[in-house]
Amino acid sequence: MRTLKYALGAAAAALIAVTALPASAATIITPITIDSVTGLGTINAFNALTSNTYDFTFSVTGFNDTLAQVQASIKGPHIEPISFDLFSGTPTGAHTLLGASTFANGANYEQVLGTGSYFLKLGSIVVNKELVSGSIELNAVPEPTTWAMMLVGIGGLGMAMRSSRRKQAVVAAA
Image (cartoon, rainbow, N blue to C red):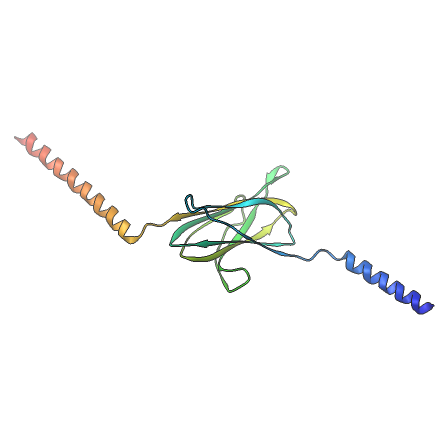
C-alpha cells in the first residue's frame, strides 16, 4: 500500500514537473514568393514569440540589388526595434552569413545577390507576441554591356553639345 502511495506521488510530481516546463522553442520556416513583375516579396504580419526562431526563405535568379526590410509594430508609446541576418543557402542545410541589419526601428539591409537560395533570420524580438511584418525587394542590376551603352550615349551627347557650341562661336565671330 505504501509503495502504491509513493508510486502515485512520484507520478503526480513528474506530471506537474513536465507540465510546468515552458514550451520548447520552435524554428518557423516561411517561404517568401517574389513577384516576377514587381520584384517584391511580402513577409505577412504575424505575432512573433521571443522563444521561437523565424526564417524567411527566398530565391534569386540573375544578379539583383536586394533590399530587405523588417519592422515591428507599435506596442505602447513607441515602435519596438528589431534585427535580422541575411544568409545564403537554406536554414536546414549548409548556409553562410552574408550580413546583418542594425538593431533598429524598421531595420533594413541591402546587398547585391546572385542566383541562389537565401533566407532572413529574425534576430532579437524585444516584446513577446510582437506584431512583425516586412518585405524583400529585388531590383535588377544592369549588365556591363548596358553600362557601356549608357556611357557611349552620354559621350555622344557631350560631343553633340560641344559641336553645337563651336558652330555658334563661328557664327558669332563672322
